[in-house]
Image (cartoon, rainbow, N blue to C red):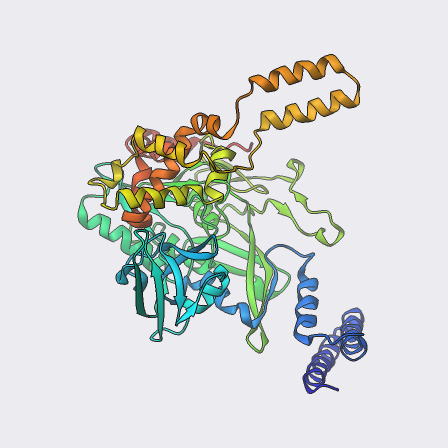
Length: 553
């Protein structure tokens, strides 16, 4: 038998034996039996299958199968994916500090991080990667390029690129520990009202957020703060607890967890005196605000410490823990549910019956009412409802399609070839009518696989009428279709506002990085304007925190 197979089976048998001994004392015959079956199955496949099999792939498939029907957050992380997991939890990796994307047969620079080795060397958005360490990169996937550019901090990588103006250049970059900021922007939206975008809860988020608020407070008097948690998918629970300690009294219970084991039952209290105990807060949330971000937003709401504006949050009330499996592999598993100060769990999806295929939203009949510290009504089972709901602003599918297909980026490259200089004021930048006319011409020979909802509905109605032999109705539908102008050029006019916004953001990103894009977007952000108005009205702010119930919709 191949030594690799023999080693795998020996290890698996040892694990099974340990499991049998451990769980035998608990009289869990079923678990021991199934572990033995799994080991026997791997042995038979390894030695008897008609073609050679890779034991690592067998193990990966078995591990993935074990967690497939539990919940989306429980997963097996093999050794080769641990670097991605580290990036997700720490926001740090070794590399040159740039996003990349595929364009034709080349990978191009999509966004150098400000101050990174790539940025300092002069790499720009749109630069085509020609070679890495002397090896032609034509045909490389983004995964291949990413793997080649990443490495231990202090090591060097040689990269050859072609700039947008056609010139070629070779750089020798020293990889560094790249830290993706948790707080990509902090600035002002009114004379005394600060705004802070918080994008995730990785290691060090608390220090970043506190330092950002301190910087604002040093610049001028800080009379109110907007914390933007829209599209923040969460992260480390302990970072959320530390962030809450900035705003609520020491010793305040802000979250608790409960699971099957005693280890999973924890109560988390703030451990330090608040740095900003009386600072008026507005928190922005939406349907992609989840996990640790919901803990912060929900705890501030339950403690009547902030007014929430936006849309119902995602509703992830589950806690994940990691367990080492040996050989640098890891199991990330859901171990508990979390409960915010009012006692509610905001988990929106019931995964308890997922193994029977019965995943569903928590029904209204099982939703319970809770109370904030001031007695306001709040509810569990469906995310966090904002105190002031705001209508969600949708982007058209056509504009989103143009972006997804790379046409916005490609036009941005064309624009930069003609206008390489930075605009005088990025926050007020907008392309001209002549520029938009150039975009129309740019799109004339482009194929956009887009069908409007109206045309799709008419097509379905036409097919139904044909099947039912309603010939007259079919003729009427055909007449309506002739009047329906939703070809590419017509849609470029119909959705001009949204397309212009995407183009403007692309150009600003090339000169002002992510910070510039955020600053450019704030004056047109309806929810930010609503938050500014509320913070400018102390009486209404106080009334909401003392009287107004949240409404479940």
